[in-house]
Amino acid sequence: MDRATPPSSQPTTTPPVDVLLVEDNAADARFFGLLLESSPTAGNFRLRHAATLADGLAMLGARRPDVIVLDLGLGETEGLATVQRLVASGLRLPALVVLSGLDDEDVAVEALQGGAQDYLIKGQIDGRQLARAIRYAIGRHQAEQAIAERTTELEHSRELVRSLGARNARLLEEERRRVARELHDEMGQQLAALRMEIAVLRQGPAGAGHPAIDAALGMLIGRVEGLVVSVRRIVAELRPPALDGGLAAALDWLVSDFGRQTQLACRADVDACAGLLSADAAAMVFRIAQESLTNVRRHASASTVSLQLHRAGAGCELHVRDDGRGFDPSGRSAGFGILGMEERARALGGTLTIDSRAGQGTDIRLRLPFSEAAAPDRASEGRA
Ligand SMILES: Nc1ncnc2c1ncn2[C@@H]1O[C@H](COP(=O)(O)OP(=O)(O)OP(=O)(O)O)[C@@H](O)[C@H]1O
Ligand SMILES: [Mg+2]
Image 1 (cartoon, rainbow, N blue to C red):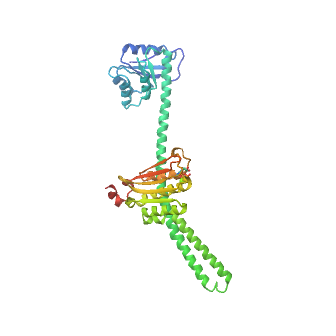
Image 2: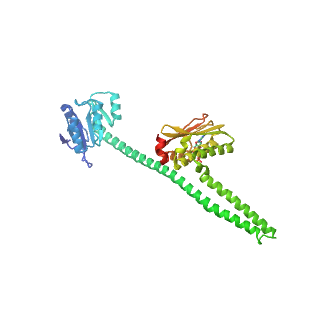
Image 3: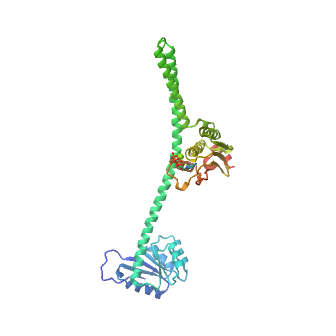
């Protein structure tokens, strides 16, 4: 059935609201039409009627109405199952108003949670209220759609930021390695040559018999040697030489260096899984361990620290634990250290969990699957 309600006294400028009523009871359907016609804005509505859910779905598919008014008791399907069948049709739904003979608040709430925008009880509303309920349901539905679209956009851009972060973590590591190599090869060699040339100059006729020149050249050599030490330190920070000896050696070095600097009791316990990781993964794990220990030094006031890297299922796990003051990870102040750790973990297809509470110390676990983090030639060994 397709009929427009008679025009009201007020002329309308917007197209009529397309209402699809799904109601198996012919008398109820007729009454609904009369109710809508009795509303002061009756001319604003165009009513179509389907007597079964199947007909309703066919009419919905042919032309999407602005609102579906759905009787919950259709005979073929009852109660919330009616709403679920409509939602499960996979068709893009307009606003949905549920119509029921039952004044049941639980069903009403469940219908709203299931996708309806309103729940009306037959016989308890007049035409004005019905017209208003339809209008409000359409408005609510539009707002919900807008929120859903924004949420999808937000999730999409969040995912984009995440993968960008993971990519940046990788690029940063590559860039560090490249800069360290250039500094070491270029600057290191130039400085060594400079030092030799000054030494030659000092021993030659230019310096002979001129104490002032001799002293100046000696000072220059001292400066160059200072520069060599600085370059070595910068190179070591960019790319710890210990990493070239493998992850286990690098973590040992990191922990003993940490112990030396802080005078804290610190233990490293690393098993053979360290040797299974790719060079990329090893560098990332090292950086995560390094940031964890930096945080212990800066924030924890701990007295003991332990670092473990061991095999766990089809992957390995890095575990850094301190007995310091702890913190609330969900309410932590914005820092880039933990963010960088999370990005590196993600770049490796792993997960980072931080378990910490005020006064309870901090527990950081990085779990890496070998499928992502093992060296290609060791991958089969890692999965075994
Ligand atoms: N082991 C720890 N014990 C106590 N608090 C910690 C620990 N690790 C992190 N925190 C807390 O979490 C916050 C965030 O750490 P995060 O490493 O992200 O940033 P940050 O260390 O403050 O700065 P940066 O960006 O230089 O790393 C810290 O400021 C500190 O309050
Ligand atoms: Mg930090």
